[in-house]
Length: 285
Length: 306
Image (cartoon, rainbow over all chains, first blue to last red; front, side):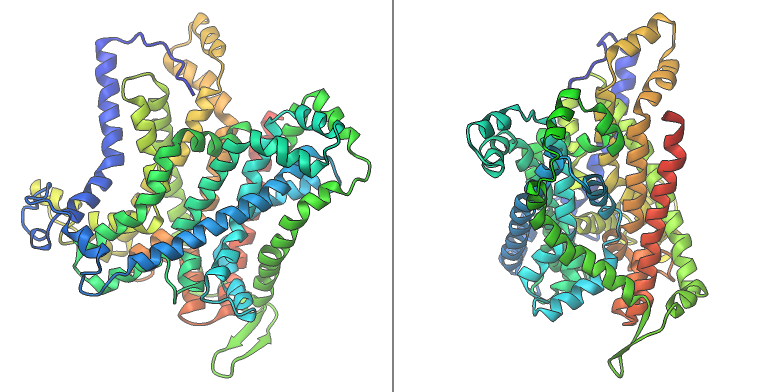
């Protein structure tokens, strides 16, 4: 992803460029700044007019109150974190394991029904998730999994699985089959060749795909809200605070930041891999 | 997309694949776990949803009865449904337009070489990976009537403050702005990857032919990005049409149904009125709309290229 344009640029060109850079940075950062400036001020500094853009006495008090359940109605984020982690990690592991088998078949074999199967994975991404909500609720109720974490994990696979198959298929197609071929002449079965040769070579791809599955599951709100309201995950807990806190905006923003931190950190750490993985599908098309 | 892939495959690779085509059951074994899972958690609920749209559930007697196309007839003659369609069109058109213009601008900027570029590339994706609910809360506070950033700026410039989320049309503006901010990064990085894949020789050749910056953009960049743009716009339209979290958290579809886009109407029918049949029929119409739109879009727009 190296930039290709020549760096010859006039002084005026540099000034123009950096004006655009500053505007761009403001577009990204102003809302984030607003979150922070409200989260980092004590509640008596929320209603001063004119509103001081920076908190006059910045404090982490709101964060500490939210984490230690010292707010008017305790948030119990520590319970939500455990649930969100269980659901997001399980969804990720299940999706990546099942999807890598399917994606391998789509990438390596030529068989009847291959193109429709691949196309169907794409079509699933166009279905409104809300169509599945009531049916999934009924199915989960039928098997006694409503308001349980396993039930929620199952329902997350509905969208996570085809997404992972779609991403991984592209990665596997880009890998040369020669090494697997060699392993199979040496007596490996297909599955052994895939597990011993292809998967180690595709580790970056598996990690990137897993990261996406994790972020999607962590951020998901609609299914968690309806299918598992009694054991709220973090986004549902956050939604619950809106009503509870009324004007306690400092606590609310602190909680919103805490919930957003894991996916943002995960992304920033793995940024290069993730961007390449995400854009590969569209660019290749 | 899938078809071009087959053409691009090298002859050697095709030969390898052909060799394996001897009515082998191996690929089906690999597909088995995914297929079973998809049958249970995708196909079955989908068909169940379709079936539900032909039924009526009576919440007082707890009896579900088959009613044929009655739900469809009643949504087609209901103001709720048409309101949600009009709101959805406004929501999708302006959201995707904004995401595309902003995303394209960012892609062009990030494709230039300047100190700080790498940092900006990391920052730009933050809105996209944040949970929708955090984004919704942030923008609610920016547009908040009492301590919002926007009203604060208006007051500083001696302009009258607005009740952004209390007016139906203004509320639509606020959710669209929040949605543009949330999703433009995806457009930016995808277009950026597309820009990076354009060979330098094309620009050099255009320069030799005396093309200006604008000329090179029109005759090299845009045609080369054609397929990327087509796919990204299609994806953004479908995703925006289906997107629920942001609007639900910011406005719950209000005020006065001003932001009641289709998925929010589906949720209201199902979880406030417990009219599952009506709810499912709106969801089925949404699905049909998506599939028809995608098929038409690809047919009409891909033709000149092939």
